[in-house]
Image (tube, rainbow, N blue to C red; front, side, top):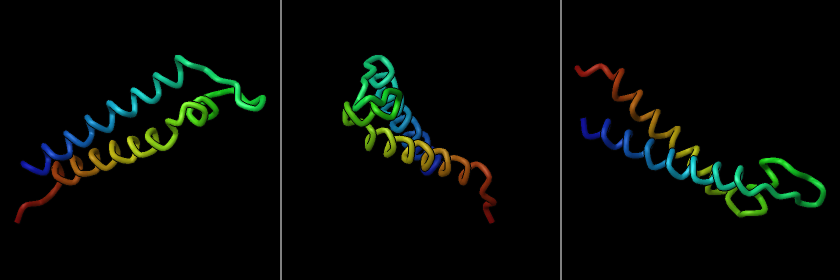
Length: 74
């Protein structure tokens, strides 16, 4: 049960940072050296690394939750 709560916390924290980075990049579009789009907005605002890390943390939290949900206790 403790690991399930840990997984939920990881998922929520990862999702909050993921959503913040995504919304920040979408609301502040940038054209960088003639290239526009989501990737250039992430790079110009410096949120590409936090975006990727938060996605990894969110996926890790989902993996912990899935592992705990379908674990066979013997």
